[in-house]
Length: 315
Figure (cartoon, rainbow, N blue to C red):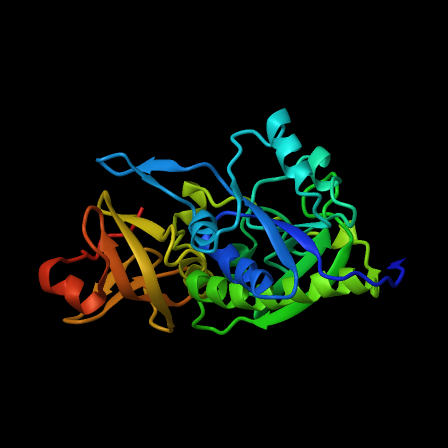
């Protein structure tokens, strides 16, 4: 366990790297603290929709509202970008939901660069730690801050905070809770680095588990699995991108479900006036919110007013 000696620093000059909504509570808590956010780095603007309207990242919108200099490099290795961030002479880089930083950047500040990660490292290294914790049925997850290193999500751990996962929590709920919990840990971590009273914990690679990017294949429901596993998949992918199944050559996304003890064959559908059940390898899935292809998301009762699922087996 490495130790960082105590020191006395008056206010950290910080460059914040982040892009989505998840990063906003962390940016806000730093901006409102005694520390100085001298700049933010976020993704380039994008054109969206039929009108190709330019949209900003949430981090850029926050920076504009609070008059924080905002940098949006296409390439993180661009020499002009490296010169630009060097001019800020920051003490520390804080990274929350951003791209992988090259060594030329994360070694630049005098006190290094740390990342906020959405799991209790070394568990769930990778792009989708929140989703995989729920998909795998974990009842606890958390956030970790660690100094950046050459390999992704492998640096020395600074601090952790645990977060309980309830049986009804989905990806959206844990994402939002973790965003708030993480912001407190970010501020705590900056203060720990400022004071120098930290003990770094090297990660045990033998305890690491992967959390790869969510793919279309990840999202497809296999009704041969038990109902609990299928329900966890639904929770872990709701509200985005959504777990889906194919029944009678039609695609349906399922956003909310319950576990049922009803015995049906895997993929077999049973419906009442207001309820939908689909058989699993063990038990059944009660569908509570569903979205037919090309239609809006709706409750099972609303779905059954205008649609039907047959008793044929899902593919």
